[in-house]
Structure formats: C-alpha cells, structure tokens
Length: 329
Image (tube, rainbow, N blue to C red):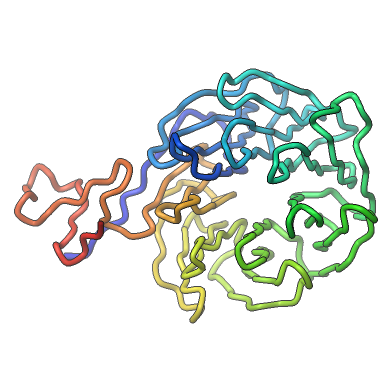
C-alpha cells in the first residue's frame, strides 16, 4: 500500500494567496507569513499552519510579505502604494513607507536593519529602518514593474526580477547593475539560496538555477505546465514547483527527474516555499488557501502522525500509512 501525501489546509484568507515566506528557526519554532489579495497578511506557526494573527492596516491587496530570520519583524508590500513594517510578536504596525505606485516585494537584510522594496514604479528602494524619516536610497534601471527584489551575497548585492523580462544583479554601494539576464518570457518568481549562492528562477514552463555571483546558468528543467513559483530544498536534494495546472511537482535536483506530483489546490498555484528545516513545503493558491506538504511522506512531524500497520483500522483510513521500515527519527 503506497503512502499518500495528505496536505494540511490553512484557511482564513478570502482571496488568492500570492506570496509566502518562512522565518528562520527560532527558540519558538519557525513561522510562516502569507500575502493575499484580501489585504490581510497572516502569521502562522510554520510546522502546523496554526493561525497566530492577522496584520491589519493595508487598504488594498497585499502582494508581498516577509519575516526576518528571528521572526520578530514582518514586512508587507501592497496595492495601497505602501510597504509596512510590523512587530511580528505583538502584531503592531511599526512603520508605513509611502511609495509612488503599487509595491510588490519586501525583503530584510540579515541584521533586519534595512528593508528593500520594489514595485510598479520600476525603482528599487533601500530603507534604513533606524532612520525611517530619511529618504531611501533609490536604484533605477528596470523599464517595467519590479516583481521581486532580494538581498544576496551577504547583503552587498541585490537581485531584482521585473516585467521587462530581465533579472538584474546590483551592487548596493555603486547602485550599478553588475549582471543582467534576459528571458523570452516574463519571470514569474525568484528565490535566493544563500548556502551555495543559488538563484531559482521561473519563467514560462521553465525552472532555472543560476549562480548568484555571476548569474551563470547551472541547469534548467521544463515542467508540464506554466510554472509560477519554485523552491529548492535546503539540502539541495530536490526542488518543488507549482503553477497553472493546480499541481505541485517535486523533482530530483541532481538528475532533474520528476519524483512526484500532487493535486490539492482548486486553482493555480502562485507561490511555493520550503520550510527552513526542509521537512515541509508550503503552497499558496488562487483558491485562497495555503497548504503544507510533507517532504518525506509518512514521517511523524508537526501534525502528521506516522501510524504503524497494526494500528490501522477501517475507521482510521484517513491517517497516513507508514510501514515500519519508513519510520525515521
């Protein structure tokens, strides 16, 4: 009897979930924030999906959300022409940063002292959070809306992906583009993996992996459908991707072979991310839900319980079946 992937469904949002991010591992576990077109970003316990709180204050769709490593601060990017910084422990709004157009992306430096934003006015902005009244540093160059902007390479450089079908690597100090990648389709997502300096990019049906220093191509994999987001496992054994066909695909990173595919959502998948410990990945969809999926199906972790064959009974058919040989500590 094959083990069945049983995702945990996190409800609460009323519109499509368009972005999500995990914190690092803290003494209290790790946390997950979701951005949604309902304008109400939510904080959850990362390993269970349990709702902790909702950040209230935006007056439009929230397109981007992030947590700092310690899960003490959150930041959100919204259609109300603002980015907001929040106290992720109390839920209080700390700062509102006014922009000239819709904001799509927010990202903290590793020390949480600076916030990078990007959006429809095509300009990257760096805010010193200790001097919120000071004008941000601005970096211009993209010719269309910026979808994602990330700190990389020890926060000395910035990666940005835009609707002008380019990804650019910027030097924070000179504000110059060091490298530019051009694509034949709009880039739909970008993830930066500090350990190994890898950038994961999706465009069309393609998932591409690039060196974060040189933007040299490492490898590409083509999926059966248009892909909106992909995430590489922390140990780089495999990666997951989701998109237009409501399915989540899991691939072997080394061989590029498809290992599994799962259908759980009832709409296109907009965003997918691995947890910091690699034990699960989260997906956000047009259907308004987040789902948490086990990396190793059948392992006892979070709310998933491994059941031995002798414990199985007909009324217990919904519980995962896990043969003894599959049990891992």
